Structure formats: structure tokens, C-alpha cells
Image 1: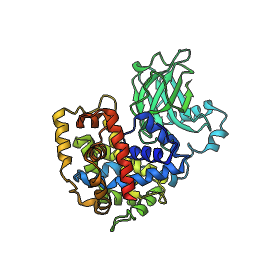
Image 2 (image 1 turned 90 degrees about the vertical axis):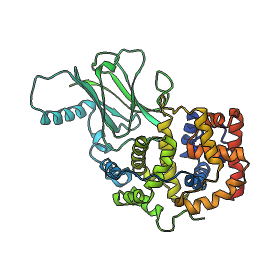
Image 3 (image 1 turned 135 degrees about the vertical axis):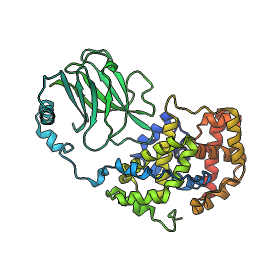
Image 4 (image 1 turned 120 degrees about the vertical axis):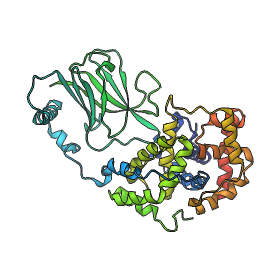
Length: 232
Length: 184
């Protein structure tokens, strides 16, 4: 797909709004939107002009409880919220490293749990590669489960893309997908999905992928968050 | 041309969502949910799934409200794009593609060959688009309507219209071009 002439851009933007582009073409349009003001204008143009076609779909009354279900899931939009402690870059930079972050989490876990014989536990803080902002925690309890828990503002996921969760045990040759995840939603993964027994220095990462996930048995998109486990 | 509904200020409501005002999202919901659910239902074809999609889509609207730029276009157009794309990502999940048999597709094409602008929620938007869409030759019009309203892919449109894929692609591109000329 070319986006060089005004006609190309208008056609691609129209098809982006119609949603007839292939996943790859759509990703291409989305990656250009940030830097291409003309393309943004074309997308907005088609959004408005094609809207009249919505008149072709008969209205349908939502169930009475639908708004309550939506409201129950609302956080505060990123723009409107003061950054929490978890999200403040300075907070993370002030820490000397993952071990300190991990010990804070451990401390909070200890406060919440009665003392008991400690099972084998691992923790990884998944951070943005660029500015080491924490986005997710991986908590593993041997013999129980792996939990992936979002921290801070939900990850911005462009329309038509998805987040995919991967692991690469220390020493493994390649990554293994642990499935697609949704921004802001915790996930529990059964330990038998892991390619190896959990251990220290196992790599976990979240990548941005086309809808449905990477077409390959490895990530195809950029790494959004990455981190390695430490033993608690 | 203003895309703003006569009795509801979508722009103000969406900008208020970006500031974290939940009441504004509720206003959008109260105003648009029945039309949006209709659009989603047409694409996902299952009531329970459609409500789940609409729920996810409203969270998208809430979280992404800050990216809306009122100088580029209407808030209503933006909201419908977010919601339609959410519905389409649901039906295009691997393994979840809805198998459309020839008979069902023929019925859909037949349905759209009648003049079915029966929804009262888009009077001003449809008024501008309708004459230009009617002016397209039938295959181009059908291709664009099937893509927007039914959420069909190029492949599904080709199957529904019994036409090679390349022809459908060119109908859609040329159809959009003609629409733009007509609308300007």
C-alpha cells in the first residue's frame, strides 16, 4: 500500500474507517497517524462523512444493566489523573533497581498475608524499555499460578492492535507466548503453560501485536514492557 | 458542515470525558447507546456479544477521549469509529470469524438493495451522504455499504457479490473517490 499521493492517503484513510484494510495495512496507517497531519485529516473526514451509513443499522435497546457494568469498570482517563506513586518516573528512578521495587511488593504482600512456610515465589517488574516506567507485575507462586497484574495507567493500545504476553526462561532459545492480554486487566496463567519450571532471571515481556496476536511463534511487534524475575 | 446533533453537544461531552467527568460518558451513553448497539449488533450478529463489545468500546472511548481533536472532525464520528473498530476486532479474532453461507450473504445483499435508511438517529449525516451514495453505480455502493454496515472484509464482499477480490478492492477505492468528489 502506498500513501504518497493525496489520492492514496484519502483512499487508505477511507478504508481505514471502513475497516477493509488488512491487519498489516491498518498497522501501517496507524503508525503514520502520529506524524502525518494530512492523513489524520483524511481519517477525520471519512469518519464524519461515512457516519451517515450508521442509519442503515436498526437501533437496538441495551439491557438495563449495561451502563452499570460499564461504570463499574471505569478508571480515570490518563489525561485527567495525577500520576500515582507507581507511575511517577522519579519514584522509579530514585530506586536503585528491581530488587528494591520487589522488596516493596514483598513487604506489601507480607502485610496482607499471615506468616506461613514460604513457597517458592518469583516476581518480575515489567518496565518500558525507554524510560523504565513500570506497567505490569508478574507474580509467580510455585505450584499455584502465575499472575500478571497491571500497575499504573492502562497501556494505550491503538485500535486493531493487541497486547501479547511472552516468556523466555533463562537459557531458553526462544520466547513462548502466554496469550493475549487486555490493557488494565489482570491475567492468571496456569503454570503448565510455562515452557519450563519457573526460576530466577526468567524473561517476561509484553509486545504490541496485530489483532489476534503475532502471526509468528515469536513477537512481531515492538516490546512495550520487559523484565526478569527475581526470587523472593 | 456541522456534524453536531441539534440537541446534544458530542464535542463538549467527549472533552469532558478527557477531563475525567463520568457524567459526560453517561450522557454519551444515554444519547448514543441504542444506535451504537444497533451498529455493533449488525456486525457481531449476537446480542450478548454485542453488549460485551459495547461495554469494552465505552471503556475505549473513556480511556482514549484525550486523543480526540475537535479541530479535525466531529466527536460523534470519532466515537462511532472507536466502537465499530472494537466490533470488527471481535469478529476478526482468529477462530471467531463468522462463517457466512451463500444464502445468508445473498439475503444481506438483497436487504441492502432496498432503500433502507430507516434509522432516525442520523438525519443530518445521512442527508448529506445518501444522495452521493445513491449516485454511485450499484456494485461500488454495495461494496461500501457491506463494509461499513455489515463489517465485511474484501474477501467477504467478493464472495457476497460473486466478484474477484481485485475487482472489489478497486470498486471500494473508486467508490470512495467518487463519494469524495460528490461530497465536496
